Length: 432
Image (cartoon, rainbow, N blue to C red; front, side, top):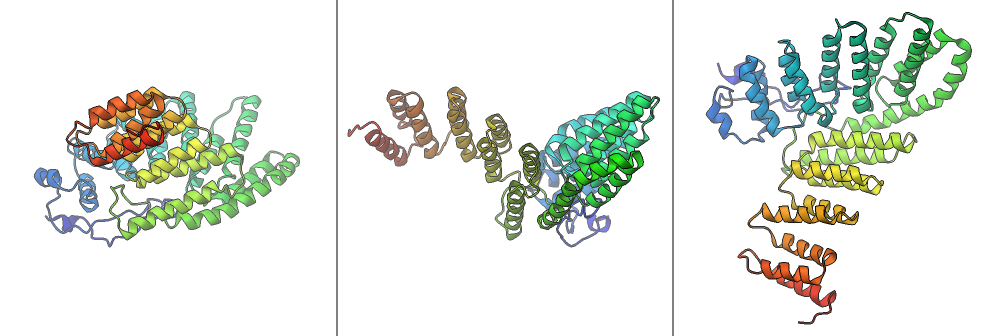
């Protein structure tokens, strides 16, 4: 039977955030032929690897295949779309249903930290709860650690409210044997509530009501002081959520990350992400700098799930870290960026400049050398940049020696001559 008979044709629509729809709306193809069936390996191999419609058909068809046949297809999809949380979720669920816990763990280890998508992480926590359900107190402790781990990464998501509530319910269900354990549990629950009501989520009002009831059930006297302290913080989170939602709603949460096409839709998505980032950088909630930076970092990481192939996003992310005094973080972002986009010369220049600015001359030189070595027909700009770098770091003779080598190359254009001559005249005062 044709693909069209098995995959419902749904008009393309913008994917909404998981906070609006539990499963998240996704891009749907309009399949009209059998050419992309998983069994048709020739067609699969020949397809444009960034063909979103073909990818969606493959993913849908794979749901009906045994895991042995499905795994290579998932690997192909994820090699092309490494930040597609929906494909990672579909992949790992195929192992969870067959009770292959080890493989499921391996898949989670490959995707969780690069895909801060709430649906994928909820799949993870449900898996951890299932694995530890029969392990007694040790299993409960492992599940608690998993909740902490999850909320540390995606606890700032606008749709994380149900996860905070689920964690609190889990803590309340944990058995206690002594008054000391009960006191410790109450303190832990209080701290979680106090964190949760500071996050602008769709469930912040319900969390506040639950927190109010919790404190009054423990001690009405103590509750009065604590609630009056946290009421303004809750009000701020509630107000920021309303503003945040306006920006969130403009984002297509079902989009796949592809190289830039220059389309109007893509341009609108880039602008939507920039508006959200600008909003978060303004720290509208007036939280402390550390917490605000964590929220901005989270937003950048979410943005990269969709604009993975956009050098300007990587550059902005790295330079934001550098401007905030976190050079180590900026270097790590650039390392990820040049791995994600190995063909981007601009990112490599920026990375080398950052290394040079902090005195890491040899790492900067290595970046230039590897950039040139990897590209036989390197652009003149790369040679010019390296000559200038050598002039700054090793002196006139090193720059001159490299220029004399480069001018022998067939790919050397007049631009290199002009740049070197200008540098020699203006900096070295060498009229010759």
